[in-house]
Image (cartoon, rainbow, N blue to C red; front, side, top):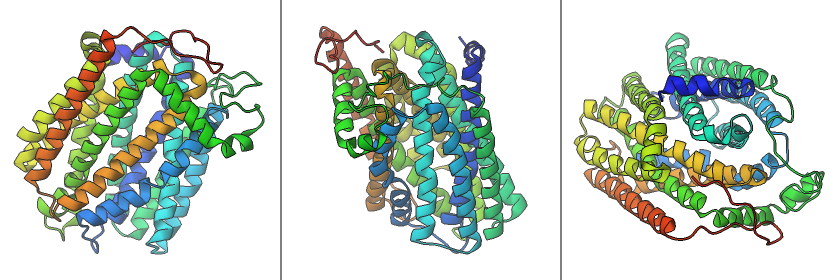
Length: 453
């Protein structure tokens, strides 16, 4: 079945169309915002970032979210997720306008990073809400198809948004005023996404909870108590994932991938900023990086076309392991040449790997955890994403030179993908050889068998 046929099938659901539209607009705005951020932080004429400077920037923006992620999961399992999608976009629009005001004022340092962090934190909360809501608008048999369409189209929308942001930069200029103009465009697009989300009924996206039991062991009205008991809730979520080991293995695999993909991302930024182009020519550097993003986006789109059929033939875990093997080869044969055309081709194939693995992991997690826990599990998923990327940035800072070129790092990343592929594949084979273990309910009694990936 082709990507377009998949798209037509899932678009038959009216509420999927509305959830899909909410995602596309929001992620397009993400792309616009990220171009403004990159222009101001990495590609300003007065700045020449080193590997350590890039690592510090990513750590400052991403790591603190790891502290608020568990709280987000509790809220996603208690609040109407449709309302979360609406208000997250409205709040982001206001925050982005605030960041624009800081840019116009020439503000740098902690205040600027804290403001950007706030936007990105709400963004991760929003994306976790989308993932938790998806099983409410499609049938279980269509989840992998819906994930393929949704996550890939969302990523492509972000790439398109980035292209719009880049064109807006050309129109508005590369100064503070131009960056502020791009941020205003991003805020407007977030508001449009919120408007689309209001077209769904308040209770349409869950969570599905008994009014006397919210899944965190707290009364339905005790949100404050649930937040105070977040540690207990996370333990319950961890136990839930442990009882559904397929989800735990998938999360470990995607965390490993995110680490190695993060190292490659830091390398690309430095290569295009300081190696392939004159460091003083920021426009050329940003234009080259835009080509990399476009190549990755095309890879994401191809992944959506081939992953459903590939996962049916190899199984979802098999497709993840095969993707990691492909990444190993790509790193050694294309990225390791440090020749610009081949690096662009490597970005294309790594885009296929990244998106194909994520589609399968999302589907495994969605189909093996209970709805009452999905918000917490997907928030934990996002925490893993951020922590893995920050760890990658710290690793890259210790080994990458300022120009980004390092054969040693290429070999380490390739070897890491190979080890991850073998370890994950072996774990899945061992699990397949064992009799299935029935998960237990909250009272310790056997629960209904979960859907297997």
